[in-house]
Figure (cartoon, one colour):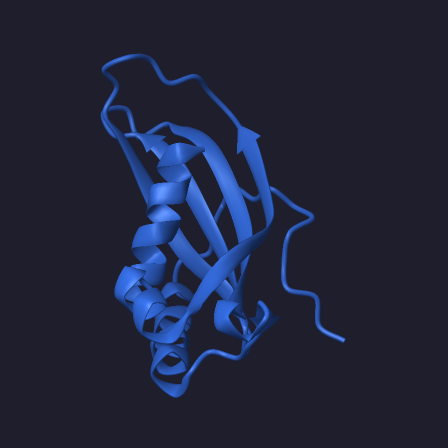
Length: 130
């Protein structure tokens, strides 16, 4: 779970919502739903990697998909899906839309990642639209 948390942090930083963003704006993302599907065990000394995809987004939410692999055997070890919500902590906290610059990076990443459909899914996680 910690490895996935680090990967989520790296992704939000790449999208422009890292520690400096929090400090400058008072905004961050809250993890509002996470599901993990464990597939195989990792052992001490295994080299691991996380492949992260942004598989959906709207004006204030991100749906992230990550797969942990044994980097030597390429065997998938776990699949995680999370929904993150953009929050202005100074305003209450209150849900807030992504600012224009972040929204542009989110749209670009969503377009890039659309070419890579995850073959393993957790299920039951996603952005529900009204």
